Amino acid sequence: MDEQRTVAAFVEEHDLEAPPAYRVLDLTSEVGELAKEVNESTAYGATRADVDAAADELGDALFALLALADSLEIDADDALEEALAKYRSRLEATGDPGSGE
Image (cartoon, rainbow, N blue to C red; front, side, top):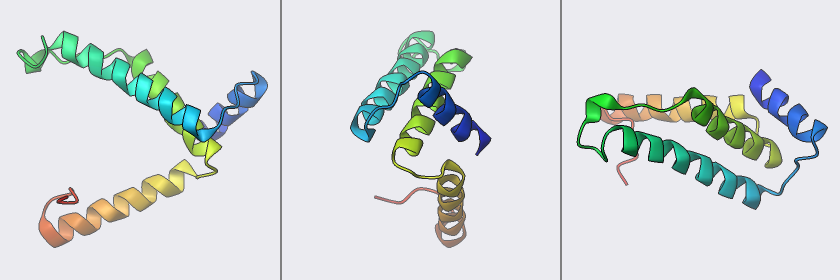
């Protein structure tokens, strides 16, 4: 995934290396910021049609996820393909992409 390589190069260039545990915390924080925007834009679910989230916040979460993948030495493309195969299999077997857990 070119994006993962771009993030890895940015992290290296700006000396932003961090252990995976830190990357998980950063990802959680960024997804939390997205959730906050959605909650606030919908009056905490009261007006669901008004969902709004800034592209830069989504970008922050994506950056954090790709930085985590890189810190774990996981190829994001391979991980995505594995997830899609899993969802396809579940849809074929049960008609639902969820794990049922």
